Image (cartoon, rainbow, N blue to C red; front, side, top):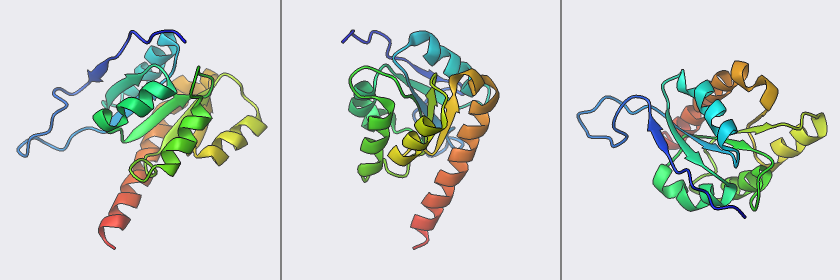
Length: 157
């Protein structure tokens, strides 16, 4: 397995630490892909929305840093070394702290069986990488709306 050199947090709107007097923080999008070029392309698609962007270079890297990052949405590639995207989906949905974090899976392999398998593994939506530039922002916004609804329902129990 290759060493992951890039560990980067991009905050599009300033300091990621929240103080009580600060305006509400922007949602954090964690992008998980073992290809640095793909990570940057995914970030460019989400950056236009003004989200805080964090990167993980593998599924294992994402699992190890999840507590530090505290993502509101995860965008992950399917084909990665060690922990694949579908395994990361299963892990997150089985983890009490991360089960309500929406996952947008992206993949080069665009077929209906694969999309169905990713959805069954816990992805909330699946995109072909060739369509990412046009659709990723919309999928992330939809995922955040669903997360907000879940969190509101839990608060009002």
